[in-house]
Length: 387
Image 1 (spheres, rainbow, N blue to C red):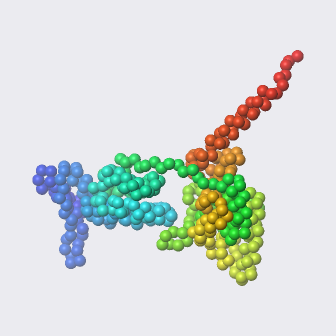
Image 2: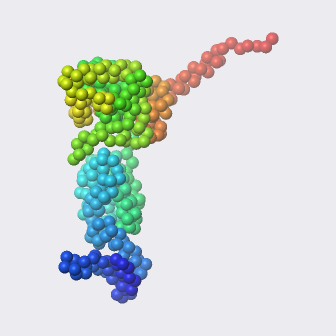
Image 3: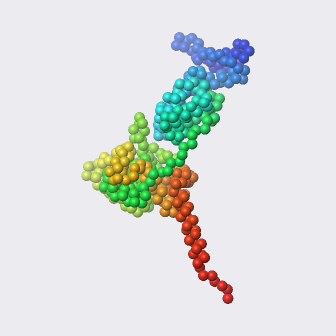
């Protein structure tokens, strides 16, 4: 019999083992232990013992055969995702676990989970009319959680590795054309949130980046904005100032003259309003805020944008699509995709090219015509013969 400080194994008969895990003392000083019957060879029995001890160290249910996937996911969210990921990310994790993973697979014992279970999850979600993109996100979250179950020696393998999630089709991004932009700017000129919409269109910044912008990040002399913070509403925590989405999202965005003029006027107006209300004003204040300095609610801004679009009779697009409009117009006007990628804060120009692939065919046709014209001009030049 092999002894350990916290557990031991003992062969009861050929291929049958008794695994004991010490649980310490009870309230009355009595010795407590967990006994598990196991079938297999000695190496497998030792591995099972290590698995049980790891589970105990993690504060999880001691017998993995009794731990459901739902119980593990709840523990993973609290003990790992909540600590190691951003509030926005963990909120998305919790939403997918609550809406899809727990209802479909939460009852399955963790160590009984099979690739067939995961495949069935995909099928049932698609049958409900959910998009392939939603299924893919749920699959990735499940795979990420099971990766840690393997790392913590709760599982032998990650069953998600044996299942191919559905591949979502690339969506063509909605965007205003030139006429739509002109009509939109006219409609937004006198709107309460007009400056927000204007800056989003002229810089391609995300909603969270625009609403999280402070005057300290605006250099009106150099006509630049430093994107260093975002403002987001996190379920159960309210409004929070967070870091940008990725390292590349931390960037310097150049302002066109009209945007710099808008912000200059807005700054003067904001200072005058605070003075009239006997309220302090500081450079660290939000650029877009209420009279008392509190930031705008992101949800209210998006709803106001939708109402404005409807009232103006414009094609339905989201507030986020002003970002796509910005990128599309720049690409169509010959701006290098690498520069567009840097302005948008994408982690790679490949992402930019993938998202805006619908713009590229037209650009390639235009490039081919320009090449043809250049050859024609060369051919039309008079030849110079040597004397």
